[in-house]
Length: 294
Image (cartoon, rainbow, N blue to C red; front, top):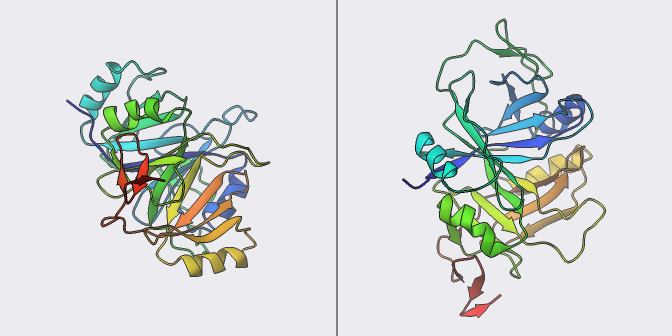
């Protein structure tokens, strides 16, 4: 049975110090801190307005950051495990189950990107509570910290994943995960857009010609907002540097880029409408316009 990916369940973002990171993700971006459903005290769970989660992951040993990861929510977890076991992809973990009943399994793609596959969250009631810094306890009362944020992050619009060979990577994202390849809406042909049933996307991005002081910027999370102009104004008011944008893509999507305190590249965007695009795409995501390859 093929894997059916429904949406992005969460992303894992490496951070050094939750105190610093929460001032960015909670107080500036407005994400809500929620009880963690794992036993690792170094992970802070937060969520956007629609419940899509962002897990902030401190070094478990205090010294070494883990890499980022993307977690896809699937229709049939058992079928997904069976398909992954037969796929030959490396570093496949054993299935696990969290305190809320969510099942999960991890695998690496061809380029070493860590991917997670999960059921929905909240399948079982939990009495867990969380304090102001995201530390979770089994019982007690939640400590709610009101966010002063003027930004409303509704969901995760897309993730950017660095790859080395676009044809090879399609063996994972297109063929195994059955994520639809769609025409991209930027200039050039340095990446492929793939889209899940709810409209959230995975952008697989070719190696750049040069690398800047903050890395190549391919690995990133794009948070979706309704009003990009007011979001930009709120970021400026909070002394967050906008390093790119506001820009507009060919489907009308507006976007900007910032960095979190740990240097992770963050995109803020609204939702574009590429349902009626004149662009076409081949099986590997190379996009053309009026029959001409971009």
